[in-house]
Image (cartoon, rainbow, N blue to C red):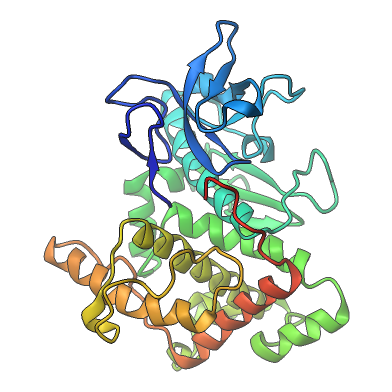
Amino acid sequence: MKVFQCQSCGQLLYFENTRCERCGRALGYLPEACSLTALEPLGDGSWTALADPQSGAVRYCGNQQHQACNWLLPADSPDLLCLACRLNRTIPDIGDAVQLRLWRSLEEVKRRLVYSVLRLGLPLVSKREDPVRGLAFDFLADASHGTNEQSRVTTGHANGLITIDTAEADPAERERRRVTLAEPYRTLPGHLRHEVGHYYWDRLFETEDERAAYREVFGDERADYGQALEAYYANGPAPNWRERFVSAYASAHPWEDWAETWAHYLHILDTMETAAAFGLAPGALSGGRSRLAVDDPFGPGVSFDALIETWLPLTYAVNSLNRGMGQPDLYPFVLSPRAIEKLRFVHGWIEQRHARPQSPAGC
């Protein structure tokens, strides 16, 4: 995430902030301008955005009343919800204080995902607007607490619908599952990036020629998916999975290989954007340079080689910082040459099929 500042007083802000702690101004995010903006009240429930005062009056997303969203939309918009919240098909019972807390955490991560998708210039439309090719989220609570196989919520993707078990937003439960499944990394951003990767596979590989290009790198997705997952969970990954995949789970099936590689590509872009915004540059490990090789990983025309040249020493640095504080590695993965080539394919395919737009003034 980039660095934001209050237009009124210069205070540094987080993407999720709704109030400036220095000057007290209300804050909201303008997705069209890629800007977190201080707001001037107009007295009728609408606001002037100080980051773009000529854009007209704005108002908060309807989910702001639940402290679940800080995004803005035009005051005269017929929509009650912002671009990100319109992607929701189902949310949990927010009359339940626990589910409300979990839902807020899910919405926070989903907005970061939407930010990344928009910066990449990828198509984004809700199922309300396009029932066939649109994207939607079901955030569901498992009332059986995992004890009833038939009613248990399964996190996954099907035909543009991403389902997330709200229990994944509970840090203790997510850690329990991570340990039980022997996963080095299990986070909410990881879940959403992975599942949206399945969605964009459908959007990016629609013709037989496109899928043939994909199969040359990832393998044949027409292999029986159910049997492949059953074999993976029964036998574990292939012994040499580290030589060919970004994660053990990526070896389960070519679809999972794509989704895991896609998720790692977003891990790289999002983390590098934050590092660049704060001027983090592990120069001792990158030829003595005092700055990152990539200023804006989301920008048009970014070289994949420059991304990797920046990413690898950065992971050494941040992993070392975490170890110094007794925390797990921030990025607990080793990228093999074959995995890097798959990441290169993702990068190139996005560039070819959906050229990244010139960044808005706020980006």
